[in-house]
Image 1 (tube, rainbow, N blue to C red):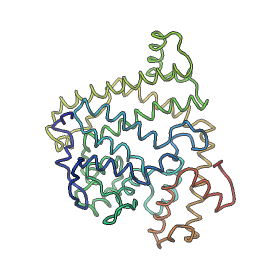
Image 2 (image 1 turned 120 degrees about the vertical axis):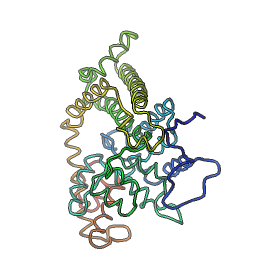
Image 3 (image 1 turned 45 degrees about the vertical axis):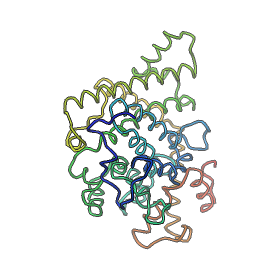
Image 4 (image 1 turned 30 degrees about the horizontal axis):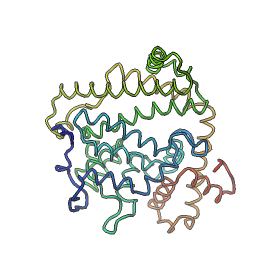
Amino acid sequence: MVALAPFACDPQRSRGRRRPEPRPPTRTEFQRDRDRIVHSTAFRRLVYKTQVFLNHEGDLFRTRLTHSLEVAQLGRSIARPLGLNEDLVEAISLAHDLGHTPFGHAGQDALHECMAAHGGFEHNLQSLRVVDALEERYPEFDGLNLCFETREGILKHCSRTNAEKIEALEPHGVGRRFLDRTQPSLEAQLCNLSDEIAYNAHDIDDGVRSGLITLEQVRAVELFDRHCADALQEHPQLKGRRLLYEAIRRMLSEQVYDVIEATRAAVSEHAPQDVADVRACPPLVRFSDAMRAGSSELKRFLMANLYRHPQVMETTGHARDIVRDLFEAYLADPDQLPGGRPPGEFGARAVADYIAGMTDRFAAREHERLTGRRVLAN
């Protein structure tokens, strides 16, 4: 077992669970969290939730499930040499998208618009809601009753308004840092950056596989082109998918090593002695300045050439329509919801919970059942 750094999260010193439980006899607290997440209903649903390309568009594109697995793999690869807690990194990584709607960010945006008069909708907050309240697996409590450190990492972003609501229900809990403007654990910071590394890399792969962007187009990005050129110098015969895979592999390796070295330098500069010190420091898990610039250029390329591609925009437009129509239909006819709908604002939130939990294909089938229109293949 790799020794933990003094500034890592130690499961023996966890801030605990909202409902106290006996310690597990053969696992750490963070391993128990990871296992509860893997066995949750919300985790299984990720296999049919959009990353970029909708479920019906192809069998080999990433889904929220495969994305979460890739984030966990990258996170653990970086955590070990830094002396961070790999089990906590894995738990946060596997849970960070549990609250995502069907149809990716298009679904989230549409649901946020629908919920504008009822507090809005944000997938990070919904992920916390899933593990705190919506999962129904245990006789003694709702949700998964995860450790504070795991829940803190899941809540990556939070508005001040929502943080104040969380603080009112859970004083000095996971919402506090957004009010104090302090940082989460290094494990949580690492999951945030691993998320970015993962989706930049796999969206190149999926974009080229889809035919919406080409390998030649991506070579306009210096970070990718440098590794493509190095691969060709070493293996002149490489072409097509093998060249793409090799360039992505080399790019991922450089980013992993860059984060390790940049984070070590930041930790050395600020010298945190424990987790409390980490919270008072600026963000310490980071890219070097040069890698940050390269990653930002890649993100801009993907936004302009893939995420805003006319074919993607057409599909996501249909997805927004499905979410809006479902929301209106369930509000108008509560009997369509399992168990009916509570009154007032709680009713709207119950509708949002139900829609957010849907997979792409279930949402499309429900839309067809309720409206008589087939908007997407399912």
